[in-house]
Length: 384
Ligand code: SF4
Image (cartoon, rainbow, N blue to C red):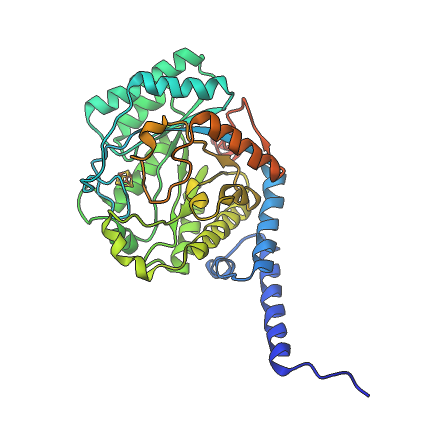
């Protein structure tokens, strides 16, 4: 007697599944990816194939940058912004927002916590203001940090688009890295999530990134994934954009809606949050495979969806974590998106909590090291 026949539906499912697996396996073993390859990887929707992708990315991460997570103490020093990005909770048009600007002493105290706890670097982040007073204040803070720490702590700025002169001035005063997310490299989509006016010009943003690189910054950019109107092809283009501009650092996260923003009206068109989370992790993994030696941040927004989201991103290729060291009294007023995690946790708690989580995932924390982008080092050496 023969064995029971396999039902046709199960048989065809397993044939289709094996074909899909073989296709993914083949792509992951290529030296480079086409846009179609990237779109195929972004479209993976089952756990087994996702894990194959993450494993490959983690293997490359270990080989090129090690299994070390570098801390960047994040100081959100002002939520005042002249811009009105349609997705952002601290946009100028949000009249419900309580505005704040930390004093120079508060900023230096936060920095001191980072330095004494051997965080290699701090990130000074704010809304986008270009007044001479603001530019001077940042400049003074940079100089004071350099004096206090004898230049021991690495400083990253994330203060939006500024003139080339301002970027130069801040570089000369000690800033060495700059984060400026493009958010999307698709011009049409850019104007669906930003007002179309002289303050929100796509070309200016791209030029700002070029200026930062020319001045000598380790330059970071990034995107949001899961935006309304965004397609898989758009994200594939974003990945290629970041590769083509030869970026040194990437910070990306899932789009999370904020009810006090114009884009909130599109909330019914969004994919579920868990899918946005998976899409963000897949994007991180693909970037790690394509740009092996860059620094890749594990965004806090990942933790807003999955409590262990940031640690899971480390296993998908990320190598940078940004513990929030902003005084807790300001945290609730720096909500770029809603459901932001850890707003009530002070810097000490946040450090302890992250240490335990990271150890659980088998990663080492790179205390006392700047953790520069190896990609940047290579880029600078090849320019000589
Ligand atoms: S995304 Fe940045 S530039 Fe845009 S409104 Fe928010 S803080 Fe300002």
